[in-house]
Length: 124
Image: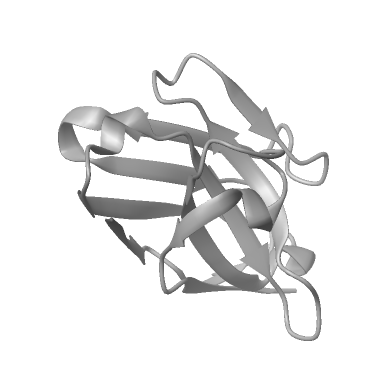
């Protein structure tokens, strides 16, 4: 069992930056590939970024590539999402999740532990 808690969301103007954190507790955090997803009102939850357990491999959705950076600190049991050059279309609830080990890393069904989410709102 892994418990995840996101923080760092808020309201920001277009072009601004926000940094999200996801603190993990429970089973050894360092053994999990971690992902960030987001869900806008009326839309399905979508993949944003993922990072391997060693932080040696990262993967991004095309919509955020070059603007967002995922990182992790296994000593602090925390994964981060640095979001720069934010756009109004980035507005969503952002979730961190722990990968189950099976399935595509971009698929929500491949993650079996989720946080409660944090709201990010980007004004134009």
